[in-house]
Image (cartoon, rainbow, N blue to C red; front, top):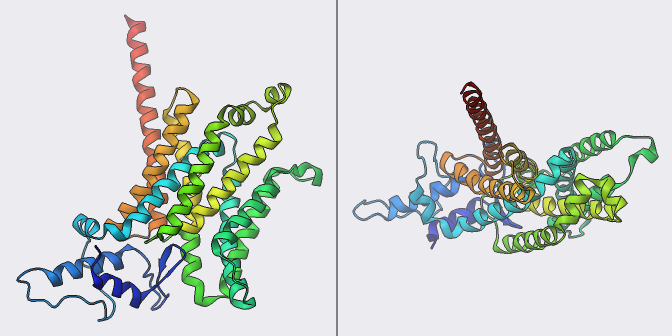
Length: 360
């Protein structure tokens, strides 16, 4: 159970909004990371200890200074009922996007993922803007998913008909969605903290409803991907032969892009656009660096690396008092670097063995 002091602290300092906990951007310093909650837990533990003589923390005495107090793993497990939805969401998001990231990397769709991710951020900002200025209530979840799908469908078309290359369209879409999200965000200053958290990722706490929606979406997409795995892989990696054998390559490409769009939209709303992009590209890179076996094994390893990024990044953010989204992104990059080191080491070992055999 979370102590009543933590609940009061959260109620006084921030507001829960569609799966995240955000704090008003005051004093020019970010206050929406894990340090606030960890500090509250530490203060509760110190205040309620036997023989301490300290008054229990009630969450009503102003902000908690945690600059000198590093949260412990005991604090984490004490607050597990509060953190568990965010940890599970990071694992599920990393698992599903990690699986899809193999397609993204092998088909050179990295900038497609980047454009779809930025479109999801724009959808969140636009939903806030429309709700505030026009009084039309639009859920940020639907805003993120809708613009992600529209972008995915637009990128699935053939730009050569317009005299443009795919790279030209990707660059234009990415620049527009990134700039528009910032411009719209500047018109709704009271939601600036929310939008910044969406764009860069500060999912300190995820609501059970958002977690379940993420789980259902991920389960549906992964089931579809496994069910049609042979068709998706054939159409993705040998489209010419697939067309000759009557495989509906164009339809499968569209479904794959829509799958990426839906999952990125959900993850961007729940965790942030930055970790959504990282998890949809980096796990696939790491898996392709170290796996030299069957293609299904590559997808499984990529999904595992994605889950490790989501969970490991959250733990890093808690322990070091970092923001969650950037921490998950950095952990994903570290996994890629380690995979590259392993590949180099294995390659050097194989060369030495070959030289010894030749010398013998």
